[in-house]
Length: 230
Image (cartoon, rainbow, N blue to C red; front, side, top):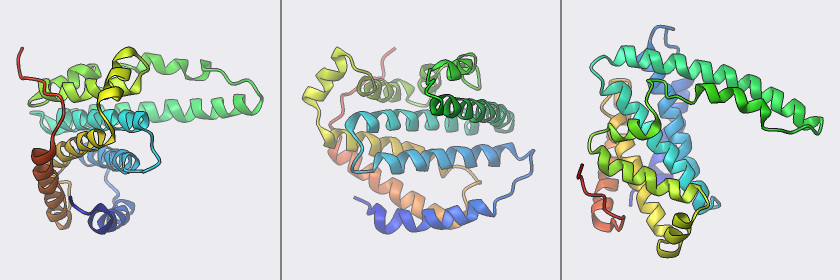
């Protein structure tokens, strides 16, 4: 497999410097959307790789990574990506303000010994996706979505305590999780490298990682198959 420590981390550090100097205009919605999604995808993927993360945590993070991919697809594969990116950025700004406020409220209540979930109840009104579609619909609209939705549903099993989750944990061990998140990172990379927003100097590294994951996935895939049937 591609050695992440030797190849991915060095240019991630370089990319962080690029982001520090990256000052898009307020109307550069595509660039801003790419920056948000790229940072989220890298943070999720790096967290998945942590050896101390439990299977359930990895499942939750991988499920979120699939959602990032769904957002990438919904914005940049659309006939009007600028319009879609603007909707996404406005939604992200709204959530950021909401959770910043509620996080402070929650910490204040916690410090007073008054911890409740009430501080986050306002978020319920923002549960609808930024483009009016729920997560399942978003994921299912991706090319080959009927296959990808299977991955999303599979990881949902690990994120909730129920009989199905126990069944999967009985028959599938840690290496299966590793193969799943490798595949999801591959499709996220494929979406990211299709955009002009990615500096040219990073494209070769992106493609090298993606090609290696693709080859490894074909060799080692033991995932349950979800046929492309209506």
